[in-house]
Image (cartoon, rainbow, N blue to C red; front, side, top):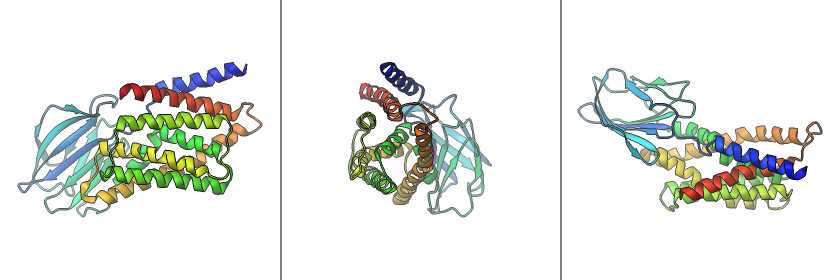
Length: 317
């Protein structure tokens, strides 16, 4: 009976892995720069794995002068776009049609007066007005950080597994702090081009960390003294994964350090949002009302997902 239960949990993990993508965050990106004659030129990038037809963008009091057929560049369909406007886009509305819950649109506009604007359109707010006085703070990257953490199933699964290895509030704080510090270090080093690691290999190693974590959970291993060591070591790899996602989206080079800071803070906020939820799940699973072997359930489910992602990513290298 125990063997049958193991097989069921492993199958559930593999089946769930087939149903979800480990990194769902692939926002579209509109990048424009104003010229002296009042025209705007730039790129419209839409993810190739988005569901449905590419979203459309429109501008108030502007005419689209040029847009070439999209070309596949990496994970995006990229079009060059040129628009002519009767006045500056400041104070004007930008509207998107066709966004989904998994595809937002990051807007970056550099004006001729050297000011810049960053905005984020979502399915709930598909249009917004560009303010006359633009902020120097790239807050859109904060929301992208939250979105990336919440849509990155592999990262959340790793945090979920860590909770099984930690005993005590102090060790939990140390472990989460170590994981945060580690991925902040490699995220910064990678985005600043100090280190460079192939993204496909990084993603495969991240999947391997999940498989390893599942084995530790299955052994009911408790790291009473140094739980932060495993969190810090594997956090370095997860930071490279975060950096890969941010690089694919594109980062505002005008405010590089601020954009990086806001993105990283967004990741941490997203992490803090899911911790209480995971804690409640583990508490309910360990309550007497649910008659299952909690560590076995977590180990086989996490291991099934990690194994699927590992095979998928190794084959894609």
